[in-house]
Image (cartoon, rainbow, N blue to C red; front, side, top):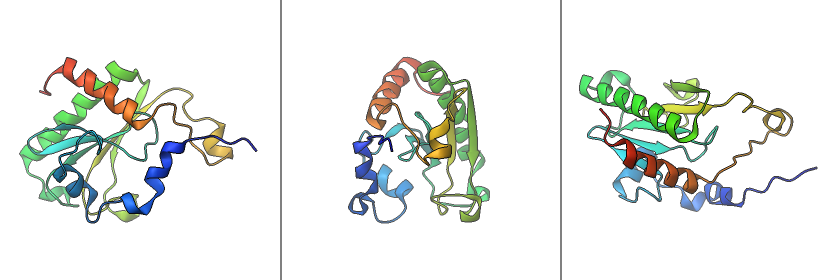
Length: 165
């Protein structure tokens, strides 16, 4: 059996590090954006890297308003979220040049939402051939870059890009 070492994953496994309450409310309130992988804060929503990414660069757009119901978001909030989605796709294209994207929102636990009580959108960059034998045969996903390195790369690119429109 071949072993794939990913020692940085232990911090995500240990229960002691998990915040109490809704992570999408608790983490922005801490004002420790680099530690919490928050890339950008808008008026109504923020962007953060997914701590358990499907692929490198997997990010989420999250409204500050704590709600699971899309009907509870105002037109202004929904417009900003969509502008941030467009902005993040541009960021990913210019930073890591994916061949495509998965974009989605899981509404409710039965739909696959890991944090069902707070709506959030996922952007997953995809590359041809990014699904290989490891997830299929070994139930393992190999991540080629640490979350901290990805965060720093994206923060630099955000400085170049300027504010979202």
